[in-house]
Length: 248
Image 1 (cartoon, rainbow, N blue to C red):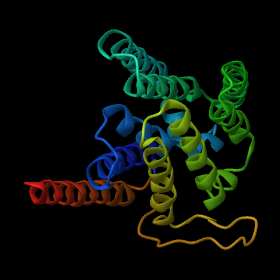
Image 2 (image 1 turned 30 degrees about the vertical axis):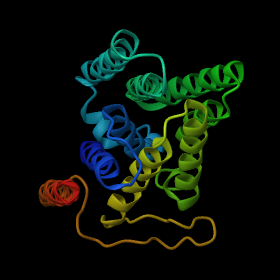
Image 3 (image 1 turned 90 degrees about the vertical axis):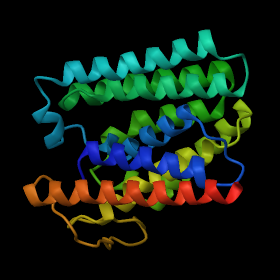
Image 4 (image 1 turned 45 degrees about the vertical axis):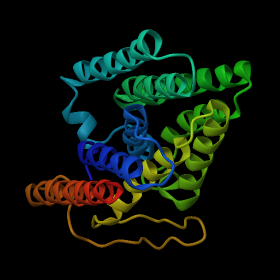
């Protein structure tokens, strides 16, 4: 699937987590974190067609992500009181900043991600935050793996969820692991609907699990993508409204 579809599905998944998982508070930064997590598996694809097509305008896209990150950071600093919500907002701001850095082409993008990841590792070591160092390690190594290989496995999903669990513990805000893990898993589930499928259990087996509903990049595939996003969004909206009505 295209990155835009993954982002939409990740954000919808974040809404589902916020509205349906018991004990997880509704949080815009949390939903943003789910959206970022839905993009994370494709850090292994520095020369995707989507990136090449955005070659002219990707500078504006990078600025959009950077400004979003700055906006979340400013929101947390000026409008939120010190505490779990503020720390989670800072994490979401960092996530959008990482995406902004990642939106480059070819080897330059690999190097940018490598240095960004290493910088994040050092920040984690300085802050004694293991989750931050693990996040940096993932960001640094992912671009140097084959597309839809290691980052598109159940093991990577578990690692990403574990990073969220550690962040959850350090930040003292319940829900980080839920948002992160669900967002990441949504990417793999969405790619399973493509003709290429996903090798969920690599390296145990090279078998590609797939339900070939669409071909990424084709006109029909784009229509199917949009239909999946719309249908998924309506389903989640209905479930959230139904759950909310039961409370009252």
